[in-house]
Length: 357
Image (tube, rainbow, N blue to C red):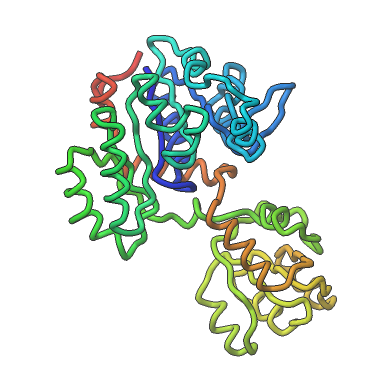
């Protein structure tokens, strides 16, 4: 049995749902398979090429030995070869051979970032669903009512194969409206709402190490604390009294400021700060490094100016990856609390309360 997990837009939390669902099913005794035919970031392991995120999920599910190499990558070079006629492979036909799934196994197939992505290779979400005759679970980032138009458009393309939707990353202020109005309306459209998951700071957080890598930063102290998680960031460009009031409003944050703003740096370190990002390639004074070392707060020195640094960090938060054990545990907790497994097990054709042999 195949189940395709797709999303309405990139960075909707699709990979997290795939992993959480796979781990839950394994705990219940199901044999689970996993594949991601269309990749984005390539990683070569033992001479085979995998999508980086999908390899992480396979490893967590204990499936790396049976995981097939990524069928195609939707990067610029691959698309260019397709446009020039140098790649005429029928990937949609290859898909059936690519997915070897025993009758008693549920194969979770992760689609590309958007429903349309992969269409040039014949591997968009609707194309795969039609070819494999597979049902589809959609993960939709739900920040406003525009999700309705996206759902209706996808329902028109996928039809009866649309198993249901996970409304994900719902802001706290919007959650009551989703629960009381939006979700019931979606159900009336014939689309089952299998989960309504609120925005979660843990899943949206990124590690200091990820920040350092993305910014090509020099780590000036506390290199052993690069696994610390950052939930938000503040910009220190005001006077020190205003900065203190501002910084106290945020926990587990990174503070971006100039390397010459010693007053702001020390103020940030007196609040809940997990990382200092100093811009302009201006090294800090020793007193900043000494205090950061005492508090075990990493200090990153970057060559970018503050504006460009903020842009890079914003993009990184917009596509936070699922890597850290803390995030994996949090995904499992959120699904346990919010996912309607009873309805999902009805689709599987088994009793929610009955043990799986």
